[in-house]
Length: 149
Image: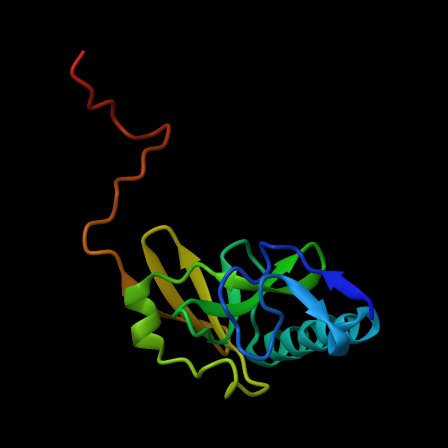
């Protein structure tokens, strides 16, 4: 029997029904693993087109909640949507009320995650979901120098 190693970063939490500790054996040999990846890519492409979602660095398609409470979703890397753990703040995870990954269907929930906020993306529109209570100040070249010296 052949064993295929997945990237450890891909599934850092326990995902029922998916490879544990980044090892896939038996049912997820390369042809099936490839089909699974292509299936999620097609799902994200179709859903993005239906929802009028434009790709951007902070845009994620959320699929479900893992047993450890983290969120499993899709993020575009180059021209392919890849399964990944999504960095959704815990407060926003509770507000989203996502299904468990074992109950998730072929529907994706689109969000854009910025350092201090999460917005829902739907039908080309943005809706605020969560904002940090005390956002860290963002400094750029136009910000005044507030240092004491």
